[in-house]
Image 1 (spheres, rainbow, N blue to C red):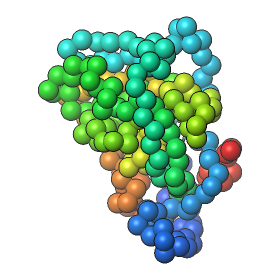
Image 2 (image 1 turned 135 degrees about the vertical axis):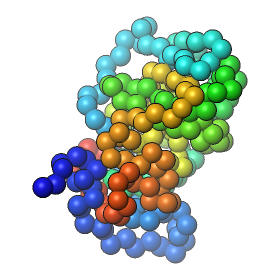
Image 3 (image 1 turned 180 degrees about the vertical axis):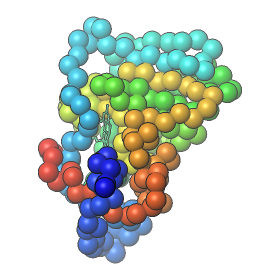
Amino acid sequence: MHKDTKAERIKRMQIPAVDVPPELAGRIPPGQVVTDRFPILHEGEVPKYDMAAWSLRVFGEVAEEKTFSYDDILALPHTQIQCDIHCVTRWSKLDTVWEGVRFRDFLQLIDVKPEGKYVMIHADNDYETNVPLADLMGDDILLATTFDGKPLTLKHGWPLRLVVPHLYFWKSAKWIRGIEFMAEDHEGFWERNGFHNVADPFEEQRFSGEAIPIPEDEWVRKEFD
Ligand SMILES: Nc1nc2c(c(=O)[nH]1)N[C@H]1C(S)=C(S)[C@@H](COP(=O)(O)O)O[C@H]1N2
Ligand SMILES: [Mo]
């Protein structure tokens, strides 16, 4: 009997034949397929927002809890990045362009206690994902408000999503509402459901169980733009 979790389904699927052009070698993690389209993947519903009531709450191991309105976020200095993104369902998209507040810059507003070494990103609807703080300090980690020069679409995470290009894209939570600093690592939604805690695509850290490098082609049956 197979357990029918998403992680188990992914493991059972066939590995696609991947032909990586030599000029892209090194940019495409093992087992990934490049697409020009932009798949839309999430659990649950796309949230509906009353922006007057929207807030981003920063809490946990901080000297002072803080809450930001969307206008507060928009007023912060914005940075543009270009990056490749890699979903555990085996699509990769190259040279994506995002704008937003660099996480490291945002942290200048937050007095994180020395013990706050881990972060839980809380998102709508009932989504969360964990990332070590050290993984969020890079130049290309954004609290993103735009994609491809335009405001994020609702389905891609408007008004605010995290972008963590060096980890599988489930760590890049859409619709984020809370940033929690933690003294110990705790698992997020997919991390509790069979996915790898670290999620480095170049190490193929897809699953937390046995490392069966098998594809997910689920995304081709879903929505994309
Ligand atoms: N809030 C929320 N964020 C989420 C998800 C989700 O289910 N809920 N899914 C993640 C996964 S698995 C992926 S691959 C990306 C997909 O982002 P996209 O729909 O913009 O391509 O969002 C991530 N962020
Ligand atoms: Mo994903």
